[in-house]
Length: 152
Image (cartoon, rainbow, N blue to C red; front, side):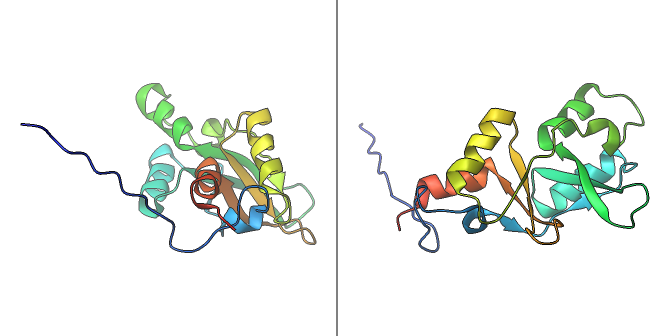
């Protein structure tokens, strides 16, 4: 008895630009999930699981300013490491091992991908060019979507 394998080509739900034409804004997820530095490992895990995301931004205020800023990223890999062999009572502050790399929505997606590779990170914080406030996250998976379905 022989088995037949069928390969189906799947396309995204809308036409996406090619990597050569795409910007960060074309691929990013608007909005940013944040937690306080003292959030527990289980709180961070619940946020990731509930929202089906791979990172949570750790925010804090700078001295002398009421503005919050992203000072750390807890990735899913950081979380798994903490769950397997982490210290009891660890917090988001302890887990935030990924450096925060900030990009603008108008940056080319190729440049953003190069920043990910150069810095060894899987997530970049997208910030508003005027206010410098975080407006979204772009991940390696978002970039993969452009590579897979970018056609325009």
